[in-house]
Length: 229
Image 1: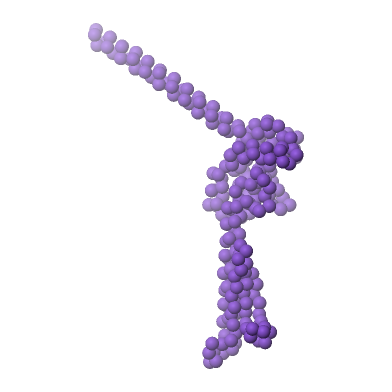
Image 2 (image 1 turned 45 degrees about the vertical axis):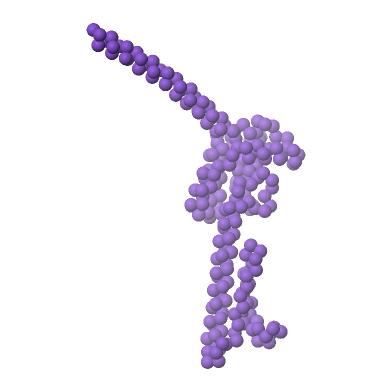
């Protein structure tokens, strides 16, 4: 965004006054505000102030639009420089696999990438995939001053463990790493738990259904026997 002033006689086109320029998503916006008065009865100083005020208005308007667009791009798209299979659909958080400072064990993690101060949230025996994601998103929202409603939307959009599986494949096959399958163990823990609970619930429901039928049958037999007496 910029406001430029051109004095009378400075440009060969004959224009003199204010020029406001802005580039938003690669598109150029510009506005020329001439100091040539449309009516000689308008005082020069009044017209000057009027056109300058308009120039400031356009600059502020385009600055606000640019800020809004940048914010939406930040929360809706991966950064153009995000490396393969690291992105989560918005900027500021990426996936990673590696060892932490306090542990030699290689684990999957979410990284909140603030310049010069990255924070990693490891998925391990103490922190599930969902818990690591929630901690990462809340920290991301705080350091980048994200609106509460946008933070809430991200909290429920937990990445699939399969994304870490794809990242491991990328790292091992294309980037020279050799992470074992076990590095994904904790990432899939919640999925295994959910499958086990679903299986246990189904088995329990089937068992209870049979027991209920037997109980009803036994109860009816007793009632009939009592009635016959």
